[in-house]
Length: 166
Image (cartoon, rainbow, N blue to C red):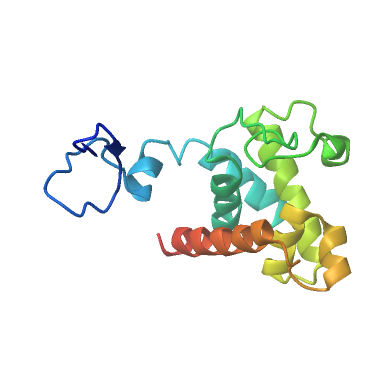
């Protein structure tokens, strides 16, 4: 940032002159992630994996993208908890308290299992349905042409791949 001779503030992350002084140092994405305990819910994820036959790495990737491992997360649309479950789905997924990490992960994994079966185990379609709803996937017979959903699928697949390698 720098202040020019007329008193105007200029901010950039790509300074063009030596007049700029560091204002805020941006953290890399990896550094931001490391502040969160990504292993905190591993025991519950392992139970969900065993019960529903969904890969540990996939469950963990969905949690990271959905809530950033925040069990108290609430979306603008009202989805709650680690796996961002909508209130309409609580009963069907056996969830009484969406902020309870165990109930949320078990319910979210059950939902993911159902979506995988419905979409003939095509993971990108199941993830699209998790994000946009099964109706949207059925309507377009592919990943819906929604930027948010396309980015969501891409992001989960990338993180899923990273977890599988570690």
